[in-house]
Image (cartoon, one colour):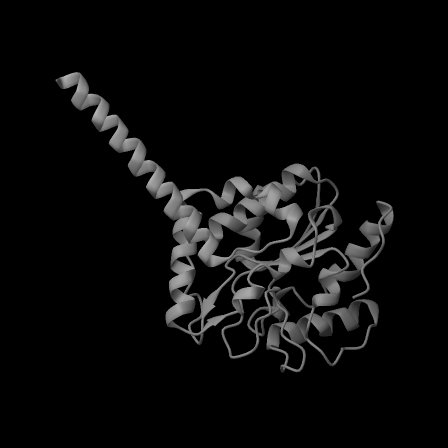
Length: 250
C-alpha cells in the first residue's frame, strides 16, 4: 500500500511540475517576448529561468495597471536594432526615461521630436567638441544602433514618473547575463561605461579581449567631472579603424 502511495505522490509531483511549466510558458507567451532571432537563440536559457519568469509576471502586471515606458513593443529595441554578430560598440545606461513619450528602448535616446534630456545634450556637446559634428535636431539614436552600437539600459522598463521603479525586479540579472555573453563570446568590442553604476556593472568585462572606456556620467551633475573632454567618440573610431572595422558615423 505504501508503494502505491509513493507512486501516486511521484505522479502528483510530475503533474504539478508540468502544470507549473505550462503556466510559465503561457506567461511568457502572454508577455509576447519579441526579440531579434540571434539574441533569442543566445538568451534562450535566460528566458527559461525562474527570475525571468517572475520578471515577466511583474512587468505584465505593471503594463496592465500603470503607465509604463517604453511602449511594450520597444522593450527589446536595443537588441532588435543590433544583431549579435553586428555589434561593435556597447554603451551602458541605467534606466529608461520616465517622462511621457521619451523612452524608445535605447539608452540615452528619445523619440524623434522629443526635447533632448540634459544627459543627451551633453553627449552631443562632447561629440561636437571631440570630432566636430554639429548637434543634430533629433535625439533619436536609432542610427547609432543600426551601425552596431548596443544601447542597453540595466533596467529595460520603468513606471511613468517614478525613476528606478523597476529596479531590483530581475532586469539587472538579465542585462548582466547579456554583458557576460558579449564579453565571453565576442572579441574586440568597445565598451563605453559612463558613471560609477555602469562601471560596476561592467566589472564582468574581460579587459584583455575588449577596449573599455570609462569616465564620469554625462548628467549635468557629473559631466564637468570628467565626461567633457573624455574623447570617447574619437577613441572608439580610432580603435575600430585599428581593428579593421567601419567607424561609427556619430
